[in-house]
Length: 45
Image (tube, rainbow, N blue to C red; front, side):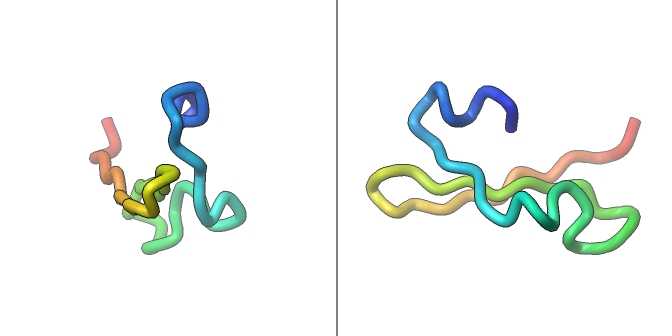
């Protein structure tokens, strides 16, 4: 997520990052210039 802007992706929903889906949900959302949106989900280590 921290490197995304350097690669052409804009971070979305920063106010809800990283637990928008709840305490056990770790995710980030990104959008590129073409309008593609992705959700990156990770497990807690």
